[in-house]
Image (cartoon, rainbow, N blue to C red):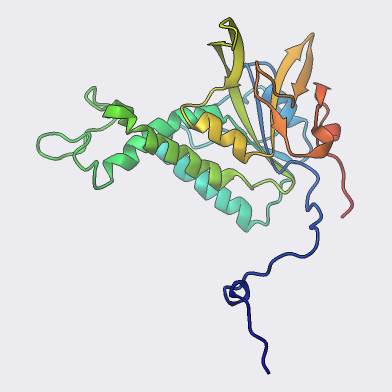
Length: 266
């Protein structure tokens, strides 16, 4: 008598019966955030076999493996170039141990205009940024509007889709880790006692500020203290942080890449 297959087996699903061991030790995606000009890019340049993708034109004084978008590229052209670069790196077999995107905050700002372009070329936005004859109004025109001018916050959907699309294209370029650099946003919030406290957050817009930390393996705040670059993966009521890599739980102190990315047996 033939055995009867279960419903799960018919669907190609095999239910696990043993404990799966961890497949990785180091964080594969990481966000480091801090104030401008604290030495983030310099610190990344000291990471062995690290490609820095400088989308903010802030690496002129740094020695390192650095790529920048074509000069005078607008947001839409920049995003297209980044996707082509990502495809080239993958086709080359991911030759870099680390790839750093410097900065995600700049790409988030650019996403407003990429989202505007995408909305203009959608069915619902076919009349947006058009003159009476239906011709497209160029960004240089003072009448050109951002998609964020749409009512009820509708336009944020398009900027969020643009930044998440480019994040997905870039997130797994480093053989060991892909690092996204962010600026820090300081904001005043009221705690449960009604007192206002200063909170450090990612300089990203809207829901993206919450989505990115959930997707990344590690979030760290960096700062310069008496000429030393410090880093903390600890999150609390005044700053975001967190990590999935066990060796980084509770880690705070001077930045040491050898401690952040530990060697593993091949």
